[in-house]
Image (tube, rainbow, N blue to C red):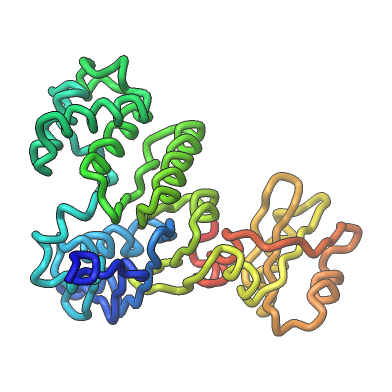
Amino acid sequence: MTEAATHPEPSVVISASGLTRRFGELVAVNQLDLTVPKGTIYGFLGPNGCGKSTAIRLLTGLLEPSAGEVTVLGQLLRGHEEALKSRIGYMTQKFSLYDNLSVLENLRFVAAIYGVRGQKGRERIDELLQQYGLEHRCQQLAGTMSGGQKQRLALACATLHQPELLFLDEPTSAVDPQNRRDFWEQLFDLSAAGTTILVSTHYMDEAERCHRLAIMEHGFKRADGTPRELMQSMGATVIEVSGDGLRQLKQQLTAQTAVISASQAGSRLRVLVKDEQRDPLGLLQPFCGAHQLEIVRPSLEDVFVTCTGGRHVG
């Protein structure tokens, strides 16, 4: 029997059922069910403290669950953590490489940990230095690099052993918008080459780039699907109101039971009205007077607001 027949390639790379983690009275992750297909970029979206990082640590085997079960790359995670390490990459939220080592020394150190040695190791390091634009910085100390440069080095180290599955815990929290865009282009290259990626973020624009995502709040998964699916089934109508006196108008509208939330964006007020309201424009019109009203396309931020009941909107 061939090795491929012995270990068939799974179409589902991560499967979790009832995954729970308690810290005393705090339930950080609560009954999480999760399915991540091969080759996708899957996102965890939610505010700080919602359970994203804890969920990633559970899925990588760094934390033991209080309850539930996880299968990773076709194997039960419990009891196979060490065997799966060579097939998984992990990039933490905080830069975790050695500041007092050069770029090249960090890469060589990680290569030694994963057993990527000799000619193969040298070729892989040279490939990564070029791929992530670090070839002219190979002798620079990691601690003297900018946020974007550190990010590229961390991604190079996380993918040095060419993992099948890559975990990224809020990887762009300390970089500027241009570096964030460049970073996501690199993620799409990895995904196109067959790497499955699970990334946590609190940026709505990043979440929209994911193939699929889960919205997290207080340890619960509130929604799950493609960004398009989530926007189409969010259970609310989005109305933009233009005109003067929006701050006072917002207070009036949010007092209505059919209004989920109202948030100002420049000279417009974005109002979410429950789908059960048959005439959402008619509901708002008595309060809006001479204001202009328009039904608009939902955004992922609107989905997040409906899932969390507007609890994270100021």
